[in-house]
Image (cartoon, rainbow, N blue to C red; front, top):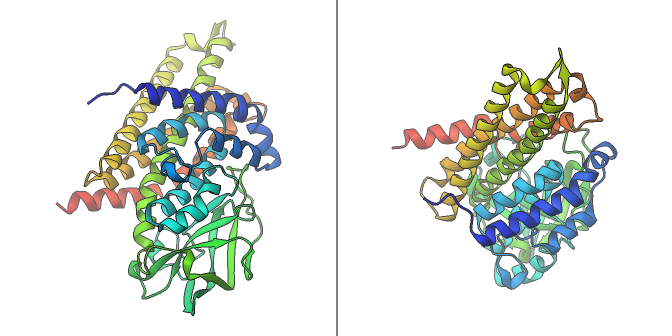
Length: 379
């Protein structure tokens, strides 16, 4: 059990930190307020190897581990939570093709994905199937060498701007065994988008429904065999949960740093806030919760890398704990700032808005408890 990072890990952690603080943090407030999707910044991230973190090197990936990815996303989210989260989603879509696609598919899609020349979104959720993902209804009917796809996806990050959508669709029976995975081009006739969602946070990335009306998708765009899609989706979510937990860590660290600095500058009753024991204890608890979350994320990532039989349980535990703690730390940091924390002149209210959704997506934290308890009771 070695808690020290390797030289390589320290190097790309440092690269991610530098990029986040120079290229993301100075613009995060404007992107949030004006709902700007910073495509050029994504491509800069691609140049640093952050667009294909665990994609193999022969198609331009960095071939790093899940633990390495957790280190990177923690640093990126320190600069801009919403932007880091989209990069995570893009990585999930790329990984799915790299891990389960054939060689032709890997070489067709991934060289463009690993540079973020082309952007990819992941599409599982539907208007009537959120936590009950296996009940999805978007249907793909085989017609010669194409599938005719009808239905819709909901809450899709990157909808309207991503070039490709890695979609879970129903090709067979009800339930998880009837789900397959298709890569669908944005320009496919019959594909359209709903209105952009008006969200509490994550405003630097667009979110909308994707609608399919007799979209003809080549069979050559099916990843794996028919009926394997749900298994791919669940495996992808293990890593996605770690990434979103890591994004909570980075945002919480930024909030804690800001609260610590403010507490040492702000004076009330003739003393700085940091001289009041109640504030000292609050800061101590925030730091402790953050460090515990960090250890849980890194441990879970290590189990996923090692293909540990209980990796799914550890990923669910880490996601539940880190996203709850991350939101609470941001909220406490806002409270330390008092009325100023509620103003958009300070980043705290954005941190609170951006981290709130982490308790919902990649499986709600209630579903994380279902996964954990199911694994416990299975023994």
